[in-house]
Length: 110
Image (cartoon, rainbow, N blue to C red; front, side):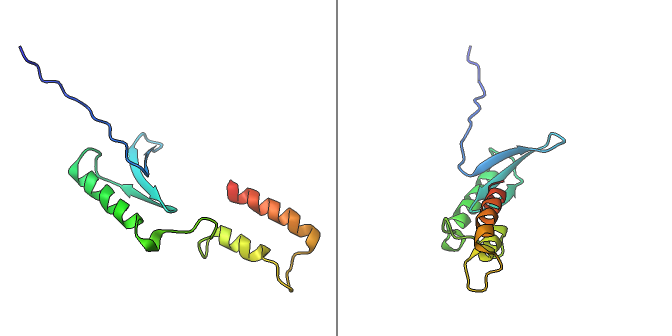
């Protein structure tokens, strides 16, 4: 006698993150190049695969790629680097600059 067995296949997607909300709802996010997008379709469906493929293709485009070490204009990191950039009319004196740099670097890592 033959029995049919259901086989569950787990597929690993790069840049896909599973998140559980405070009410127990499971959500899936595509996160790449500092951008996080929710995928609302159920994993394992054709709609999910299509949404994932579209997000992956869009994240590969040249306009999404950000160079490491170059902050995005308008972000907190960019603002810190603008503030600490040495100029002749810099508002920060030499001894304070070291403390400010350490403090801002710690806040960027948090």
